[in-house]
Image 1 (cartoon, one colour):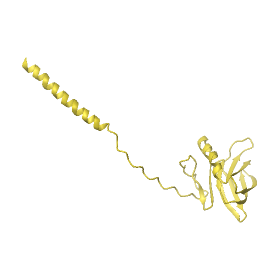
Image 2 (spheres, one colour; image 1 turned 60 degrees about the horizontal axis):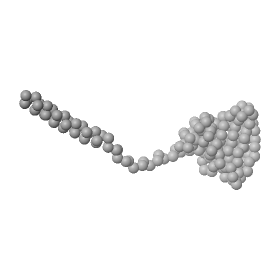
Image 3 (cartoon, helix red, strand yellow; image 1 turned 45 degrees about the horizontal axis):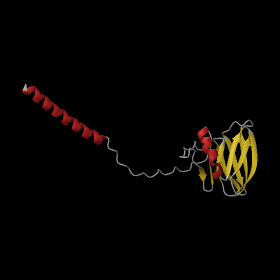
Image 4 (spheres, helix red, strand yellow; image 1 turned 180 degrees about the vertical axis):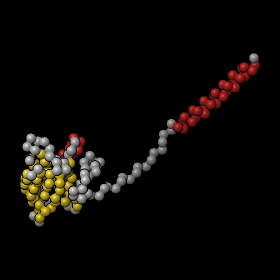
Length: 168
């Protein structure tokens, strides 16, 4: 009878040793991962030329600005998230353009020509119903056309954001 009891003891000792080894391994596996230092942000994408395909989305949920120098713009507002982001940003740009039908349905693919006192300041095709435009202070005429119809409005920029509403 000695043999079975020593057998049990050696099995118990082996089981305890195995359990201790497994516990040690489990503790190392569940240890928190080391904290990595923050990585630098990716460089901003360059501005896209007018007429280029839709701009990539910025972190704000809006497409990125296009244009050069002091004449830059962004158009969008397709979908509720992008529309909300565009409308929230209107206060941060000197000029906002809205395009819709008389019943309020949004319009896209509107050709826009903005002329300043020195000639054409910016030409673009609005690929969404909202355009945010950054231009220097001054007097401008905004010509918009779509589906064979044209509208023109004048605006003076400087002293706060302005909004022009085009209904076709």
